[in-house]
Image (tube, rainbow, N blue to C red; front, side, top):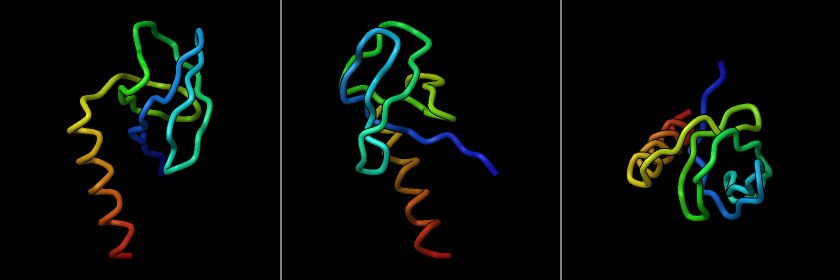
Length: 71
């Protein structure tokens, strides 16, 4: 099963961004413009898919962490 993960953008350089991936910085491909540091993106297979609101991103991460703890 594959899922997208919300990640916080730490920095942007051209078509790449460094995101916080579960506490680790990861470089991803950024296929669209106008994303800035501090915003949240859904990430899948090393690329950003879309920008998401911080509230939605944090809620999703919380749900994933609760599911992980219960297994």
